[in-house]
Image 1: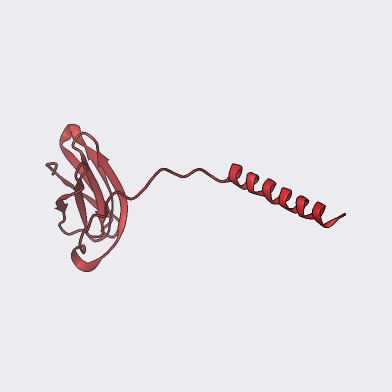
Image 2 (image 1 turned 90 degrees about the vertical axis):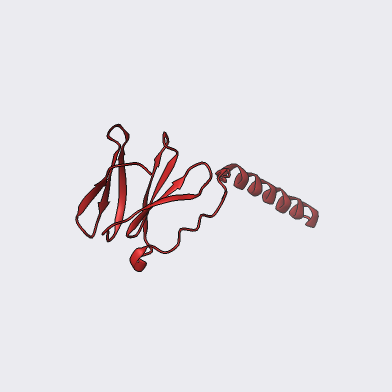
Length: 119
């Protein structure tokens, strides 16, 4: 083969490889960072995050944050409250809006606690 034929073949293979990569590459997720929300340190210094729960009706986001839960306004991203009180390592929160209650699971205590009113 002549030099120009080899160069043409190499360029053609590179083009085919690039096309295959572009077809196989996953599209962008469309997600991007809107805002960072400073939460401060959890009581007792335990920086640990686990489950996040959203109450769409109340427009609140509940974030497990070590020994407490942070309650964030879903519209303006401000911290509107903290649920604390003797927890060691929170995992998740289950909301029961019909009863105006929630249930918090704590892995290290091996028990749960409930609170009465929404924040």
